[in-house]
Image (tube, rainbow, N blue to C red; front, side, top):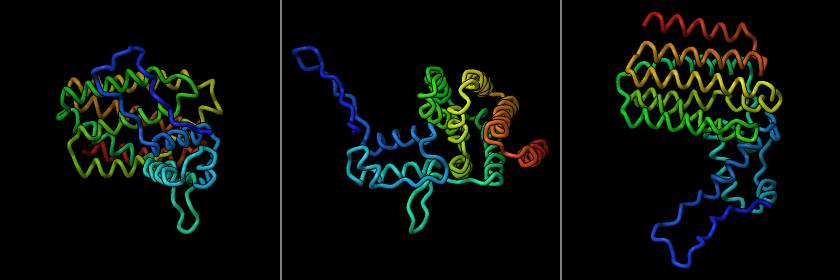
Length: 258
């Protein structure tokens, strides 16, 4: 039965003079449990996420489960089907290729803008996220690794300072099946170390370009990184190469003309 983790009691007789660390809301803890199960493949695409079953398995009421399912939907790991419930999305290769193309376009534009606007504290925040991601190297870490990667990319887009771009990117990111790539790592664990090492190197290169204020370099590094994701989608998810190349060509041509 799922139990909410408790903080250890202090070993001193005297109460500490600082406030206790905040605990995560129950809905967020349930979200993390379901997030890990989806990435681990326990809920494959098309699986229904039944509130009653989940509440019974975790030993909680249905209210935080319903709230956790809302968080999953917002994160793109679930979808609500009218009059049916919530399920893990089933995405067609065409839908995946379209989301990939939109992410390629929006992140490239955002990185170019962010390089001229990013603040020192934002750069340091990116570096802290990268440092935390370095510790997520096992299959059991894939859920947190995915969330940290999302935070990293979202922070770059937010550094662009373009409100509409930020809004569009969130929509595209929620449609991008990054969770499927992490789930694929469970089926191909031999690729895990190499994939994470390459991802980290690409992230470091992006931050370096942003810190230097080099807009052209930042955009090129982001494009290189997203193109690598396209290669992984082809290899791990079996997305037809023709669909991915079509999306890439359209976007890359647009970027060269700007």
